[in-house]
Picture 1 (cartoon, rainbow, N blue to C red):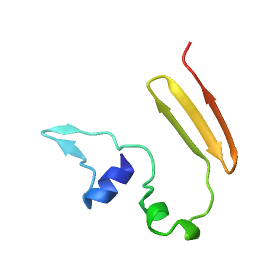
Picture 2 (cartoon, one colour; picture 1 turned 90 degrees about the horizontal axis):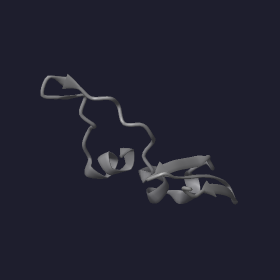
Picture 3 (tube, rainbow, N blue to C red; picture 1 turned 180 degrees about the vertical axis):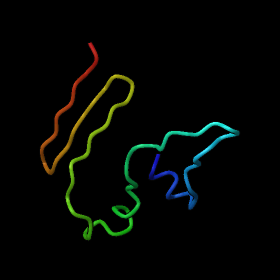
Picture 4 (cartoon, rainbow, N blue to C red; picture 1 turned 45 degrees about the horizontal axis):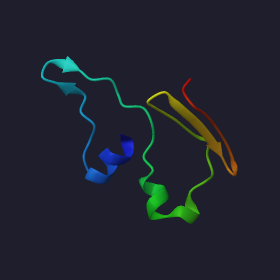
Length: 66
């Protein structure tokens, strides 16, 4: 979500109507897209529809749903 908000050039909303919105987790990947050689290596992890994975450098691990 952070990358999409950054690409759109906008700010993630803090409220909708009268309800406070939780801050979306994560960091934008836009700096990596713009200057890939200047970005320090970091651990990436994600979850999508019961699939999870982690990646650090050339190492990666993932699980599949049962």
